[in-house]
Length: 633
Image (cartoon, rainbow, N blue to C red):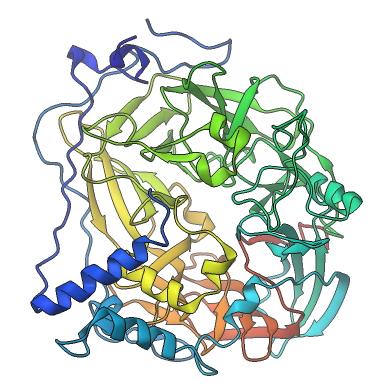
């Protein structure tokens, strides 16, 4: 079968959709030869810790991406990207509780001490910096925090604004071992849910270990039970000789869905990158069952979903998500977009089928007014590998020798009409984790994403790496996550273009915007920043970027405090500005080993309210705010 026959879209005229991005180039750094030698050696050292890595129509109600489905793009004409005032932050960052230096090249401070510095000196510096004053308490994020309780009441030091009345729900990793076995992968640990009901100066907290099928089977067996993990446990679990695929469904529950939560009608669902969703009691945070789907969207090998479904931009109350069905004897894959609403929370309604010739892995995606945008990384998820080995072996990079469909944006119309693919040059691999926002303008579709320097699922995602200061800090020399804006033009002759919209010297991820601006043009986003001081990965801040005016980055931080993703709760004032509201998040006070709930002015980044201390919470994922106690106050 030819390449054209398995591609999602064959452009008109038989030419492949092409999108040569206009990438801003960095100016050469004037560093002495010996410094470059040190930098090269440090990058090589960091790399040791990074794992290297005819148009068929679907069933009724589906739109299949097939041969000849839509017109493609060709030509060499450059497209104009959105006008972006400003650029990478420079000078001093404006900050709420303290100040951080945001000079250019902050990631290279250790390399600039002396021209004669050797790699051994660099490693010695990193090792010597591990002391009582460095990253105090950071590793507590990766220690078991299994305490459970309901409605622990604490009075806030200052009342939260009236419109921040409701429930802030944030998942975390909660338990790291059971019965003599320990998790090795930081993403594998037993999940936990935390809820904070906020009402003025009163905050009521509920903590609950997620009683998933995976957790319950493990508790019955008194050790970490069967199920797919990124890394095998220590010591390894035993497999019965008669069932070497005992960790695969349906032999094992794979429902450790602690990444995100959404509300579908009156039902709260806990999600991960899977078709599996757990129903949660929004008052007690107890798991009350699986979502047993009444539809027939899943095929035999349904290997993925997204932990980040998007609300329907037409404000129908429905969510838009997808699942991935792969072949048994071939790698051909169908991503099936669906809608899920409160009128039938157990029934996913098909929107479109997107066909790809290898199984993609897409953690998050974008939705504009008319389109779903699926960024395809040059990686395939090998179901055959995961059947016999940990999941870390399944994320296999695709060697991209030419521009093609495995390094591209798939543009899927929400009305079921044919879609198109906009490819990205092979020298610019589309490694990414999260989507900031997606919207349309007169030129095309704009999508902002957090890009990673390499395959994000092939890095060293182990607890040992997360808790090792030297490994954390030196790994940043190899590259950091940044936020980029891509324009996908409607004009088929205009290529995709992009621009950097975050500080390239810092590590930026977990972005959020004002939820009222989803699928609309936005000016502001907020995110978590690591390497805020230029040296230490664990130097964390909550940052605010203005991508319209180019105003200097603002930030909130406290020394040895480690914040979660910040959720923006917009003001209810009529005519309120986009950045008028409160950021709600939790933060670990590393010195005391306690967690606090914070409210920070989204405009000025000054603290407006805080409540605590609460018992410690481990590494957190994605928080959501449910207004008015919508999560079951």
